[in-house]
Length: 136
Image (tube, rainbow, N blue to C red; front, side, top):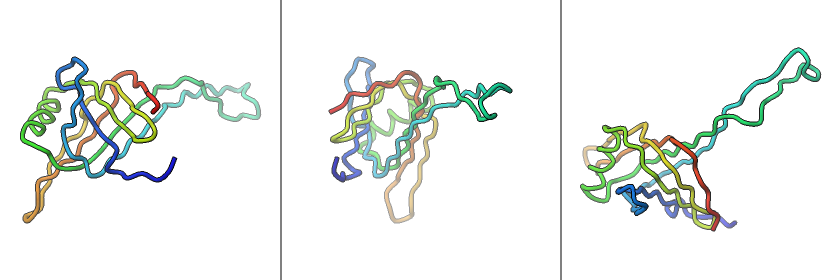
């Protein structure tokens, strides 16, 4: 895989719950992270007293980004999802890699703006169920 432009990573949401995904906002910076919670099963019988981990922990995905709204409707949609605690399916499309899809909840939502600039926002999504991956 060759180097890619960060702007080509897309974030889309299923706004009607029927599988119709649309881009809501222009993200200028994005970070996607995956984590697995470890389950320590070390005992006095562990070889050399080395820690042992169970191979099945809780998996999570978190996406954070900042950007500008493309229109008033996208602002209202994200704000409504946050205040209502709405779970929706989201897609994260990574060019030349694949698409991640699954339910996320907005866990962080911030507005910012400079006196002589546009209003920006920061968004954090937390996985709320199984995330699927489709390779390109």
